[in-house]
Length: 293
Image 1 (cartoon, rainbow, N blue to C red):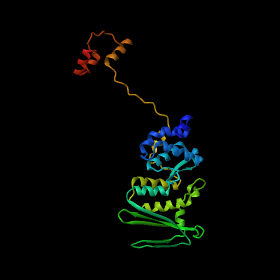
Image 2 (image 1 turned 180 degrees about the vertical axis):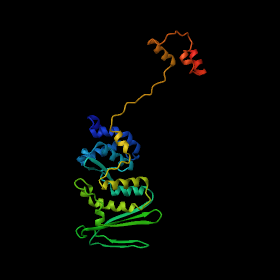
Image 3 (image 1 turned 135 degrees about the horizontal axis):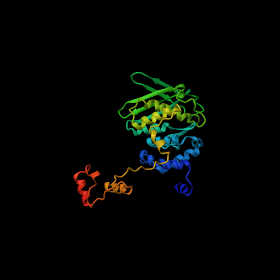
Image 4 (image 1 turned 135 degrees about the vertical axis):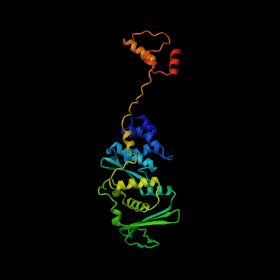
């Protein structure tokens, strides 16, 4: 694919990527190369053409957020997604992405998340020791409608955290504008599972990456746009500012020659003689250097 790009003029997205590459390299984990991220960006636009209508800053910002968390967007793994909401490109973490970050934190050893259907046997016992009993029905035609779900997180210290949500509580996380290309419209089950995982992980000691992922996901469900690195996305989209060189310190002898050409000088100096205008401000070392010239 790199050869194909080299043979033709780069698209606007590729030009943006070229400007963003130095910043991407700063936040990309070792297992994701910039070239692969470019392929993922182009693939995401091909799958979701409305991404081309998003503002460049929001698109690059969403890509940078994906890089910062180390989650490849819009792949078959379902770790994360780049979603267009009008003119804004929003980064949304998939439930598998949240689970991956939870495992990488070193605090979590297992996560169990399931949806519950109306014909299944399901009981929750709450108290000093919470228990969840669930007999799933594997056939989609026999289990009936979804009535809710639960998530159990097992921690390294032996404790466990569980959260159960009704179908109404799950759907309350769905933003009002979630339609069309929204994952809530096309992948409701995955979004429901992610809501369950996110609710349970709120009670787990979070790593910085997992905290950011949850914050981004909650903002995405409200249709909001959050910048973890707000200045970067804007900076890399503008033309490079020409480097401003600091003025070099002029040689007093050269300055005196310039004045002479303008008729300022009215005295001819002898070799090694210091101009009276400079002598009072010069230290002994400078005077010695002047005389040796």
